[in-house]
Length: 492
Figure 1 (tube, rainbow, N blue to C red):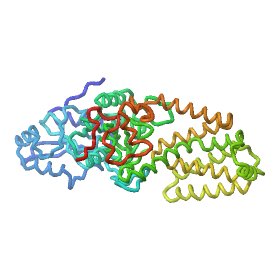
Figure 2 (figure 1 turned 90 degrees about the vertical axis):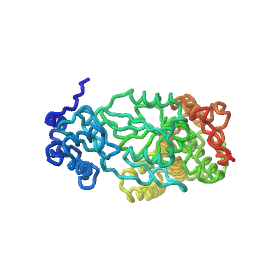
Figure 3 (figure 1 turned 90 degrees about the horizontal axis):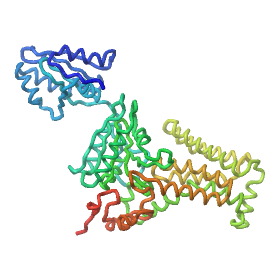
Figure 4 (figure 1 turned 60 degrees about the horizontal axis):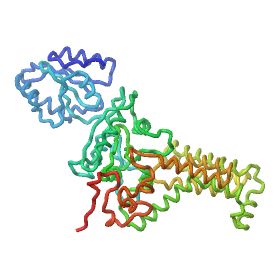
């Protein structure tokens, strides 16, 4: 590894070193100035053009202050960190100064002073705090994460105003040097969990990390599983809830999506407003989502199994109605189902890629027109359109988009199994999925918790499971928190 170069007291040497790193970089501004009352101290400023406002920034205040001092007073102010800036950082090496510059701050070199000074400023431009698009709620905050990892961490701190909330910084990407924050509650999280996350982040080298999805894929234990082992969120309140449960939130710079770990099947079904609404409606909504996740995976396959192999379980009138609807359709039922499923998946993908209102129009109008035209052309039967539409509705009811993707993929697996073996194929497919889920873990936590392992928490986790008990009964934290810190509510 190349040895780092120390900052020199000679300004010319420091300028030459910085020029080696940033030659042919027209977006990097470089200014040589004279400081002091007698204008007898040379200095060198360098910063990224759009990240600094020379007129109103802290930089202008520092320069104004230094211009009013004598030569020795300037060195004394720098030595004692008396610039009047709380976040001024000193660097001993050129490489550290380069990293500081690339975070969007100002770097100041002063002739005769052997350290570089980082002066905080506006930093890189970003979209700012916006509303979360993928996790809509009826009740609760509308704030969503933005592209700045610092602002995202601040949004969590805004909700948990405790010094026990710790933010640990990591660097990922050999060339991108992306800031990654681990946010956790010091007295609730297991120390081994934080160490394990840090170990996994250090377990790979990659050119650049441009989104938290790259971290997720490179640190998953069972990378081949369709089920995500990290929970994703765009909501600061959801992340804050996870921190209060003893979990760790991983935030990546330039990404509005945070990662929550460990996680389990039940966590993906929950929503933020499950805890803001009364327990009756929250429980009803959660049960609907569990049913929706099952049908999103199995309904098209179950239709094929019933109509192709086990028609005797249908009432006679319903069976005759199905047969009449399929009269004139030239394709087998499995071809009908696959054709319509692929059409709906294409419409979904087109709706995502097209801008704004046009994408919504394609999704709704396209589905209606294609479905109706296919029925009138006798390419598919009306019942298949109903089955596929209901399956799509079930997948949309799953709160987490990444979790819903697993059911969208497994849906085609069940179509194949049921077209081959009928109802027995469906049972065999369910067995495969359950065995896989039973073997799946997220940082040591069983994926089917509290379906399994409920006795580890004296069955307390079952109070926030298929149905949500009244909030006054949820007195214990889930299994993620330290055993001695499980109590979260005491009624007086």
